[in-house]
Length: 69
Image (cartoon, rainbow, N blue to C red; front, top):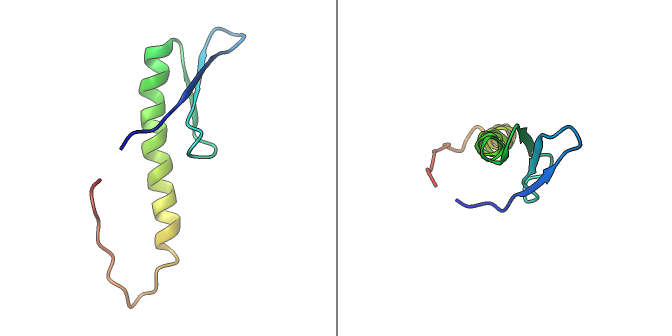
């Protein structure tokens, strides 16, 4: 799966990276490379957390399955 991200140089020199498609999914790094590595981890964590929240609303009578994308 692919996501668009934005990069912005902060006043302190760090690179801030945000994924607009995932509200609140933000990370940073000392340079662009580190920031991009960190946002990948942040995106994975964001998706996992949203999945966990969604699963709480699934009725017990339904069988949950995992699908890799």
